[in-house]
Length: 297
Ligand SMILES: [Mg+2]
Image (cartoon, rainbow, N blue to C red; front, side, top):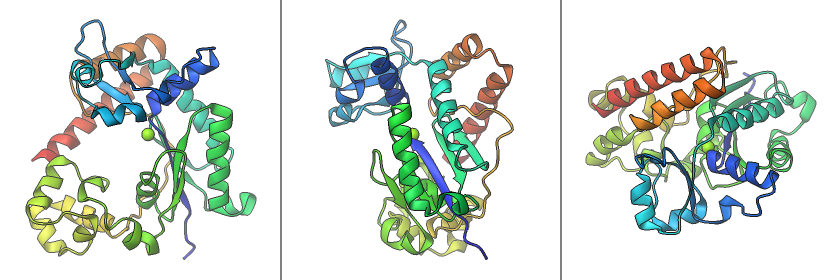
């Protein structure tokens, strides 16, 4: 069987990078990525949370999802910029347009993530790893922000590959590299292993992705039901899902409920003027919270 070539393209600290690139293009001398800064919602009510943080904000212990109040306590000089969802949609679309030059088979996975099926593009563009470097560099030079690209033969491994060292990197994670590159990672870093699932596994001494890969699938099924089999396959690098062209726009769902999601819906409804976008957000939020509550059980 022909080996598929799949890429996963993920914008590094998307909201912050996009805001930084936008400000630089408009003559602001400060690059937000070089100082402790966050994108965070609703400063007026001061109930907002951190949506994205800069790399210099990380040493202060600032976490995505924590309140702005708490983030400011950790780092008094912290620069807080409000979210700008219409800008994110423009950047996301520009990224999609550039990627479509390399394949007609691309799937938008979230506002800052795309899958690209490169299998047939090899004839036109040659070596996939070289092509991934070219794509990454073009995005940086033409669009002004950096991405990580994971290259593999399936979506799961491409996605896991893009999560390796950041920013501005291309990583391969082919099935034969899984043991070396993925098995030593903590189990919670595997796609679909949420906090509650990770806790259940850790309580039973399954601490790394490698432990999970080598666990008995029947035992995992007892503990995690059908999710057990799915994550066991993922830990072994197996995934047969296809890159699908989206029928609806995709907007990233948020883990934190309440204030922030409402803000997104409002913002989108006034700026995007597209009822499909709003429906997609509501749907993806519903799906996401359903999935989260399922995983929490
Ligand atoms: Mg990202």
